[in-house]
Length: 384
Figure 1 (cartoon, rainbow, N blue to C red):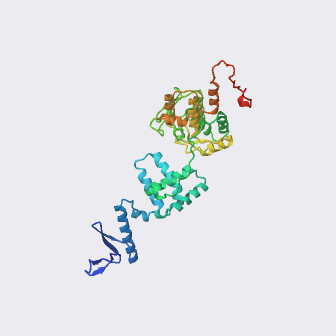
Figure 2: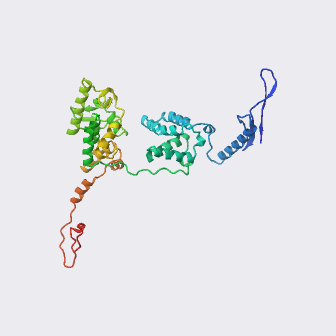
Figure 3: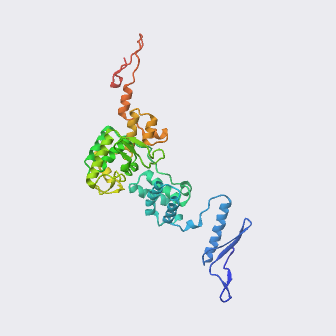
């Protein structure tokens, strides 16, 4: 081992002195390596030299090496650095995803050092989040966010930790009876925002964020046209949706209620769903932050188990069942591909029944000796 305490000359007295900190020095691959161990203990210096040799050997063999600064970084520090870097070249919505996923990771593992995030710690984290009610997909995304913050793929960091099984369904369309129950429950809700919010979603197929950020200058009641603002996709931003009678009535009634509550005419730059205290609007220059409480209460009262995004699936499905051309559906929904359109349209049982009723067989003469099949086979009748 080549560890030593270097000597130096005191600039004030000119006296030759010995440093308190140990250094190490060795030759590797024809090059001299000389570094401080940053420790006053010889045993630590010798261990530092061994680790440095191993690190260089791994690098020479093409094996990823651990960053030295990661040895003392905490999870909270890594997440903060990741958030700062991520916000430079990503959209605000993408940054919000990172902040949302990182929140629980930082709460539970924030004080832990990066080297201490072992497979056991990750499985313990999974168990805790599941006990708290976190979904499988949500927990997977949180751990994925942590892996990105550390700077290595999940499979390399924790190869023995399998991802939680995620639901394969992409959403569903509500049955007519479910729509009726949901709207009836929303009509009885204390919040006067929830009913028009749900009606607009069902009558346009707009996303939650698109409705929440809607302003009155985008609503043309005279021409009966609705212009969507910034959407999730480029194809969806700025798309124009004509109003049918039900949608026009919804906007007109909501505008009248809003003007009465605010005691002044509607202004173009006001939000359609302004910041409120659940019962009445407070600041029309700010959008409503959430309708979560009213939405969950309406679902509970209606006895309907669905996501808000399923209202978009329902609108798309209705158009598909109504034989709306594919190009028109893509223009209204803001989709860019046929695959995405197919993902959102679900042919419901009632439409399937109507479709099979249109199927028939041609009349065929029956020859002697050829058995006839009764149309009542499905009712436990025997073949004659």
